[in-house]
Length: 522
Ligand code: CA
Image (tube, rainbow, N blue to C red; front, top):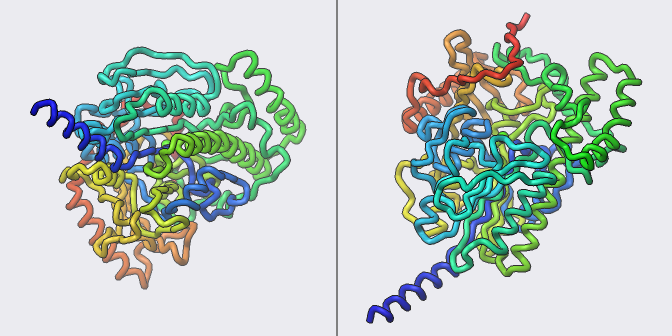
């Protein structure tokens, strides 16, 4: 009898394992939607991402995927937990992620999924990623070449040690993710793999094979490259993230990375030396120099993405050849958006569109209609609940997102969110973006830079001002909209239980060395 029930239990398990879809979560760092071929942007024709785009062709592209806090670590914590920063305790880069709390990988693992994370983790080195049968992650941000990686191969939640790899990091992460898929995972169980690249994070060091890609092209510039920040509050004037002033010699490849092997260094110098000599000869100044920096920056950025796209192509090919494509949900997403010269900037952090929105594409054969585009307000904070529903787990009541399953089925519920709360904390800190929170409804956006020495508001109408160049806060004719958004903002803060005072650990303890004193506008 005992034997029979064991057989029955095993059969039930394998049946449900066959039915429940696998989850392949492909995640990059700082990939702007403007640099995804499938999205509409002024760069569109210059950023071929055929493999990422295939997910739009075969699945759904999201036009309004908003992040909760536009910066790396905090968004990773939000995805793990399905909660806003104030609730998961990770508000700024430099916080330690409390790995003992509830996370979706733990729930999936408990429910019979085999789980792994490979690539960038960036939630602290104090403990191994929790909730995974396998993890192999970069130490900290990790370099673009020859990365040391922490490994937990037996899934006991403790680091086995650090392995030093030689090669290009994006390719190594792809190799390791494919290794796990091919040889290391428990094939009796459905899988959930977080395949997470470092690229295209600053400082945008391309692979040897792409060092000369785009050499013969002049990329178009965004219309706001020479923004003077008039029309906005103190915050936009005080930032330190301009292509003109903030970029370093390393960012601009005027000096080579210090950790290359002799072979890598040779290829690097062969590619950049002639280009840098040409720059020295040209003796550019003023706007012309900014234009040169923009070209160098965005070309390197796109070169890094070329390797990401190649890796995704290899992974999708594996799914097909292993017969897994039909029963695997493939998600492509980045931790936030990024500025590619808009407002003269690189980096992220702001509630303005380029950093609030992140690319998101989902392929789910038989469920998502191929080639569909979705305009609902969705967020990476919805993933935890989505994956719980997919895995047949009761969704915990304390998460802040909402399952995307009906949205993916093309049946967005009538009561789907009509507006969204955002909150950025990291000031003082890198790039000097003031703390702010706000609400966005797809057309209007209300932002409060709430620190006592600023206390200023901005309101934008994206229909008449898609570049967010001129705040209409307090302007005649905006009273009704402003009142409505102010009410929604208060509602979100109440429902999410956002504390009135920022938690003490939102203060960055270790300030960057080259912080310059911010200056007030003239
Ligand atoms: Ca990031």
